Length: 138
Image 1 (cartoon, rainbow, N blue to C red):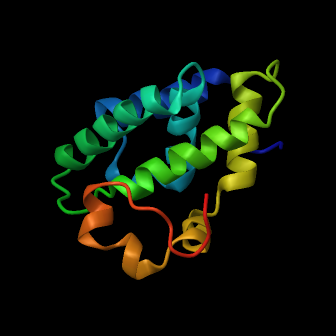
Image 2 (cartoon, rainbow, N blue to C red):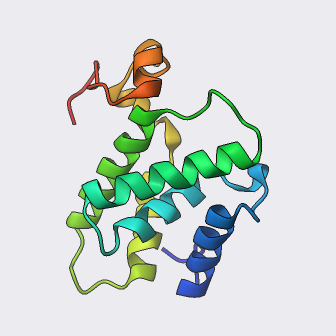
């Protein structure tokens, strides 16, 4: 797991840069989304972390004038996937180690297409609210 993050300050900088919109829109790849999701889930349940993740993404998109890109299904999908992965880790693993493990294991954003067809995932309904996967159950 070497090569990702070296300390929790790096993680905090990613989260704070995202939340404050000081991170450029082009400097926030999938890996950074995983960092934020792990940070939010570190001491929270899915129902607690989801509204925070949703609000942060919407704020970021609004700040940069990006319309029509938020997808409620994708947001909840990744929160669920990250939370399930974290649940499988030893409770004594540090936030840094947990985050690096998440990035190592879930860094391929195409994972969602194992569960969803593109047609369903980009449908107006999936953009607006959670829809169940049509390819493979969670």
